[in-house]
Image (cartoon, rainbow, N blue to C red; front, side, top):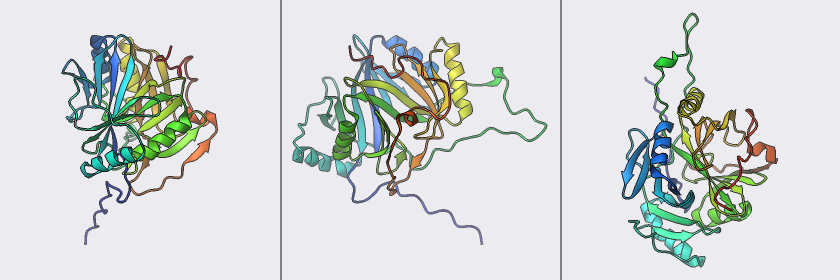
Amino acid sequence: MGESSPAPQPTRRTGLLGVHSLDSFSLAVPDLAVAEGFYRDFGLTVTERGNGLGLFTDDSTHCWGNFSEGRTKKLKHLSFGVFPDDLPRFARRLQHQGITRLDPPAGTESDGVWFQDCDGLLIELRDAGKSSPNEKSRTLMPASPPGTRCAPLRSETGQVRPRRLQHVLIFTRNVDRAVEFYGRVLGLRLSDQAGEVAFMHGVHGSDHHLLAFAASNGPGFHHCSWDVASVHDVGLGAMQMADQGFSAGWGLGRHVLGSNYFHYVRDPWGSYSEYSAAMDYIPCGMDWSAQQHKPENGFYLWGPEPPEGFAVNGEVA
C-alpha cells in the first residue's frame, strides 16, 4: 500500500474573529514614473490603475500595493482581507467599541469597512480571498553534486521576481498602544517584541508577521517586504538593484525575529523594499508564544550594521 497523503491544513480558525491577510498598502509618492521604474527594476509587475499604479507579482491578479501621486511620500491606508461572513461582525465590533466608521477616500471604489487606527491611519477591512500563505513558503537551497559548478554564469541569471507581499512595517507613536489596538480591533496577535519594535501575525495562518511596528513621533511607512525563493535570490536581487543605481540599503543579513534572510533597498523617497526568504510561519490553530526580547534582537542575527538613518520616519517633519 502506498503512503497516505498528509491531512490538509486548516485555513480558518473557528471561533476567532480576525483578519486573515494584509491585502494591500497604499502610498502617495511625488513621481509615479519614478515609482514605476523602481518597482519594475525590483522585479514586480507595475500597471496603471485609475490615476495611479498597482503592484503585482507573476501569475497572480492580486494587487499588493497602490500608488497615487502626491506632494511627498505618505502612507495613505492599509487594507486587510476578511472572510465574507466576518465583515458584518467586524462592523458590529467597531460599533461596540465606539470606533467611528468612515467613508472610503474620494475616488475609491470600496464596499469595505473604513476607520482610523490609534494613530489616525486609515484602515480598510474588505471581503477578499486569503492572500496570506496557508503553509510555510518553500525555500530553495541551490546545490550540485561533486565535480559540478553550482553557481550560474552572471550572463545566465534572470531577473529576481518576488512571489508575494510578505509584510509591511509602519511607524507608530506608541508601539504598545498599536499592538493593543490591532489585537483588540483586527484580531491580530503579537508574535514577538524587542524594545520599540513589534511583530504581529494573523490567527488564520500567516508568516511570523504580516504587520510590524516601529516607534516614531508619528505614523509613516518604513518598508514593504517581498517573499523570494532563496537566499541566493536575496543576493541577486540586491545586485540587480545596484546595477540599476539603487545601491543604498542594508544587507545581506538574517533577522532574529522571523528568522528570514534579508536585503533592504532604499527607494527614491527614503523608505525601503525588502527581499526576504525563509521567514518563520505560524500555522492556523497554533497559539504562538509571544516573547519580549532585548532590543538588539529586533534587528539582525548577522549582517552589516544598519545604515545611519535606517529607522528614521521621513513622513514626520
